[in-house]
Image 1 (cartoon, each protein chain N blue to C red):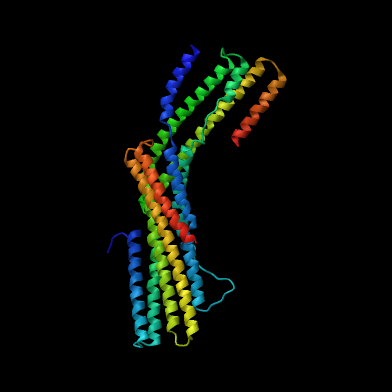
Image 2 (cartoon, rainbow over the protein chains, first blue to last red):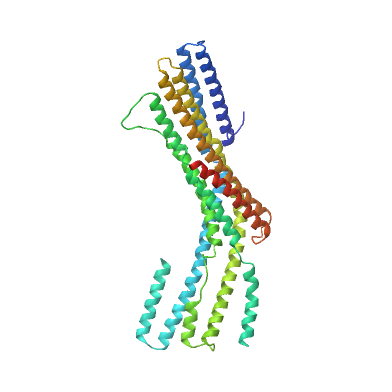
Amino acid sequence: MKERLDSVFLSQLADDFLEIAKKFNDFRFEKISQQEISQDTFIEMGKNARVLMDTAREMKLLSTLIVEKETAAALQHLKALNQEIKETITSLKQIQVAFDLIGGLGALALAIVEKNPATISDKINGLMALLKKKAS
Amino acid sequence: MQMIKGWALCLLVYPFLACTNLKPVQLFSEEALKGLDQFHELDYGFTTSCLGDCTFERISHYSIERNIQCNCSDYEKADSLVSDLYQTLINYWDGLYRLSSSELIRYQLDMPAASLAGAGWNQLDPEQLNAYQKLSEMGINAAAGKYRRKKLVRYMNEADPHISLISEKLTFVLEKNLLGILDIQEESWYMYYKTQVLDASLNTIEKELAAERYYQLKDNAARIRKKTLLLVRILHHLSETHHLFTAEDMNINGDIFKDGVRSLANDLNELHYALEQLKQ
């Protein structure tokens, strides 16, 4: 008997249980057809086969739900890496934001040098709109 | 003099541009995403099997209830796990796709150049300024491309062992456990309908209907099995190709990579075709 019940072992055990249940079913169908067993025995044997199949089902489910340490760690690592990729994409996109802001600030500086209040207000509005757009 | 400077800049920028083609990685991740998308075609899961069994049990006992109660919470957990494994793979390939996409970033210096031109602080005429702007954009985009390539190679190398383990678990769960549960379900149908056919109290038409129903269910199960196995093959293929690329000290612009992606695309196309056939 295996010391540790891992997912692969459980799944194989479930397959074995199902095979036994199938053989059991073949046997009882053959015997009832030849009228070698009573209807009650046939039903009773069917219940036993059912128990084997239900157990196999539970084992398959348990085998799925067992996540070995290595797999759990791999899942966590890949999720972290996915997050890092996402952040890299965001940083790369933000470089364009920086260029646009530099441009916007340059235009504002020019308006200040020219002491043109209407243009200053326009440029500030433009800058605010840019910030709002990029932030969204 | 200005012209010479321009050419020098061009020569400086060109080698960057020559080696920043990320198209092969983009194609690779695009194929992977297309392949994994087939997962949505799989109209069978742990919860579906539980509900199917629960309903079948009521039918076989001629039980009609106003509100059928089926306890499938553990089966839902199994589906959540499958979905988590699958979604993590999807997110990875999607990240690679977006990072390698040429549409992601194409830096433009229109605004700084416009404000520079407006200020009149430079000695360049508008045409020269435009030329420098374009060259600078090329340089920045090339440098960004090289940076992205470096990042992509690192991410792929780091992700590879995790991709293998996650794909292994996912294929195991689908092939051995989900299809295993389908096998058990099929045996339940066999037990029930075979008993019906042997029942002396039923007439031949009723027996014929029972046999017909059984073969319909078998037929549907065969379709589910084929679909699942095709999906398993897609997952295997993606994981193996990913591993091959990273194990070969990957040059994403090299022939091995390009040929590998082409071969993967061909193989996946065959599997997609087989899945399409099953839909009909």
